[in-house]
Length: 96
View (cartoon, rainbow, N blue to C red):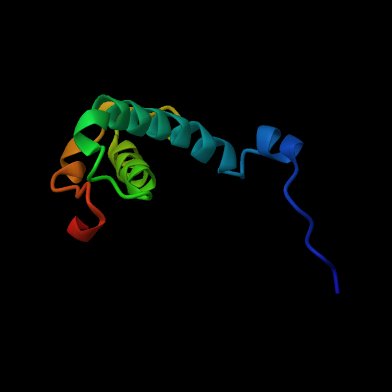
């Protein structure tokens, strides 16, 4: 029985069949946008924000990023995405 090996850093960087590189490239701007939004609202969220709110926000922003159709995978940005997907986002855990 042949054991599957892990994907190497070199494979991620060079093999076009692996989408890991594109996913990593897309996740960076989503995380940054979530951090900027969270930081800008920190005063308002001080007492209302549960511990997992930032990761839920990043997930929501990542969906916005994936909805952007103006650029190819790995080159999309949040501004061109479907920001309406964040409408109704609950900053309190009970709201989601």
